[in-house]
Image (cartoon, rainbow, N blue to C red; front, side, top):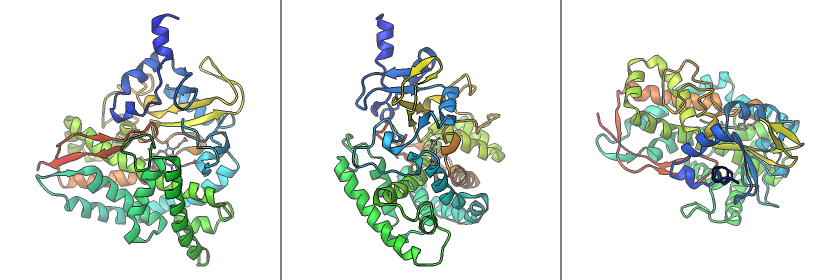
Length: 407
Ligand code: HEM
């Protein structure tokens, strides 16, 4: 094999270090150009395909009969779920199970309910922004991103307010890469033990709500629906975990990634400050730019072909949203942060097809309000220390973002 081909064959984009040190761009650019559906034979997670171009990712998303999300086939991450400790939930299901369970929770993020949330989200956002120190360094990730998403999540579950930080903790536990030295848990057993505690806590809430009149929160909605009423323990933990991580880590990292992007692109900050009607575009661009969920994985249910490559039944197929969102063939000047794009919502950060993010509009709403309120206050920020990124190949996370308000 020629040296160039050997180099190409050896590319393994599942290495979490690439995302912790933010060095993934050249590798994906090379794959999109030279080997868009790339086979990695040896990785810590076994062999897998990487789908790196926008259109190919879309094709996989839409063909859920060939490309399965099923928990029993390994689920939705390049890392298989540990055998015997699988936690099925509706993101790790195919139809018809997926359809019924998704339908149960979807009304919480229906447009009419989002309109009800608007005032509450704005009020909380104002309180958080007005409490920030002026001229002193603070951690935006902790003071703003974690706090705001945590409060939203507590509202969605109607969760006991004083205990609400447990939600952020369980979310961190659920997505932790146990091999990272600074992970919040260091083994699958430790993770399972924490998530069992989460299950017990939620069971108590569930038992109280199943005996009460139905109310409009995620626990009551699941307790009173035929599709979710009788979940066994692991599926119960799985679904609660899905809703916690779904609503938490993604929005949180968009709030941090967004501020970072604006600080790194001050001309774009000034553009949106001068033209506030661009805020919805800004929000879509932030979500594309950050791509908080790096990948979703599927498993081929049959032999098939994708962009000329033969994929065998049982193969792992990983859709790298982070790469599709930098595909110049689809998104003009994809490597630039541009707040006035003509089609800003054309990105893959929310996925596509039957599993497309159920909370997309809620996430956009939270971000829109945050940036509207920042602009109303005419705040400007500077980065005041090293950005700390998460060691993960699944969530593109920012764990610390030291900043200072400069006016
Ligand atoms: C910027 C914020 C967010 C991003 C980038 C994001 C991203 C994603 C992605 C990539 C998927 C999988 C799509 C696919 O497989 O095609 C997904 C699914 C999901 N998300 Fe989000 N998400 C965000 C916010 C939220 C919020 C706020 C909630 C909850 C209220 C939420 C709940 C879910 C759920 C329940 C699923 C599973 C849907 C299904 O399997 O049918 N997400 N999200």
